[in-house]
Image 1 (cartoon, rainbow, N blue to C red):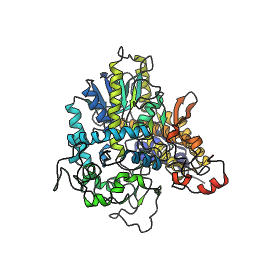
Image 2: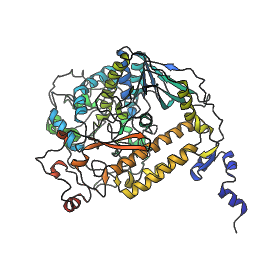
Image 3: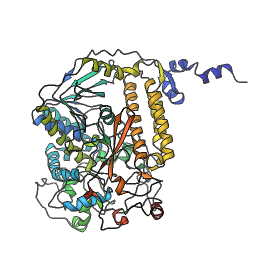
Image 4: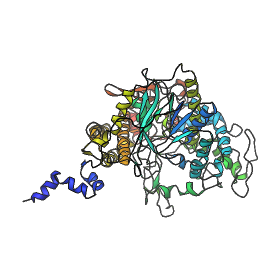
Length: 622
């Protein structure tokens, strides 16, 4: 016979005593329902409203270049970040440059190699824009002093100095939870809260502006193997709830970590922390050695001189635009690789773990394995959809996006090589600002926000603080991770498995999110992050079910081949009354692979079971 006391504990009768003992975090992971011991929060606004011409959410490469461009054109700029300038998001870890220099590289070669290696769904116009502007970004960063700093110093020192000198108003450690719009649906501000309430209680923050640029970065399911724990798809959630289209959710990133220490992100990125003015050795793709920092553009990719620049022996002034310098013997010997960079690998495969033949351990960390990012999309291919290259969100006036928050599809279905992300973000941030400035200057009057809307947004924002008993964000996040991060959900997909995962995610969103609790500001942030991650998970699962083919990092076991007739497109997602509406944005005919080449010449990477599938389905390619 069971003990009565034990039965009561199992039934949850004594959970309050467990929580009072201070073990609520462990209890939250073991038993879903917990009691909210925190104080209730009133929804009424008590803090003053801050106002500017332009609001920028995020302070990385995209946000910094957007803010500097807008200030140069005379707009007042308010920048808000969930972390601190130069330290949050992925910008602190940026380590490579990839500027296009027309005196060295062939433009058509870049286009064709990029198309083949991203499986013909990359945006060729965005690549043209990248090639037009990346060299200027390179020189701008050098003038800032970014090339003479370690990656972490670049953001915290260089970017902050530039922003402060330009007169950008900065709001830090503040999470944005909703966008605001006027009576015509134009985006004109945002609401959020300060979550670091160790010294004083969290406060509501209301930010008003004539336009908003989201530079919120990417996201993952708080994966410990990659240093982006604070990025939780917040921008995608904000834009989706405002009515914008989202794109690129079926393709997932493949950054690796180490077998012996998969959660040791700092160890895995120690080269990015210590290198300054790096000496870069060049060899075939996949065999680059030495520290690869922003300085590699000076040392290799821009001018063909294999030496340190501006940071040590052998340093010299950076080349001017268009200047050609003699190639070193090493560069000359590997000239064919420089033109293509990482884009020349027809046998590039998805590394899903396991020691390759002859693999050696890296300083005791073990061989490299996949899965470091757990849910992050392909750089520049996941986020807010824009169809006209202005960085404006389709169908939502006053809202712009840039960097990894913009689904520009610069890199299509998989990331082709290092360096495209940071420079792409800087370029898009500047472009977004140019168009946002034009939009703001042409407004007939400043948009007006109904006070009732602000109060409603604040009520939604504080809701987890006022739930008396419910689910902890830790438990929901852990359940989400267990559901979404397995290999057979993110990468190798089958409708039965995706439907099962979707049922679990829908249950969490519909039944658990409304009952999430938050006992302090930190937990309130986690609650909103869990909500955003769940929304992203549903988008990924529905996109994976919708695209009935395999391409890039999206592999369907029931359709293990590319289908250019039906799926040479981008999959878009938009909010509607039924929840999510998915659609196809078909790509130009001229972006398809060559009709003069065989299927295998156009698509050299073979998916498991692909040849047998094509043999049994002769009409698939017709």
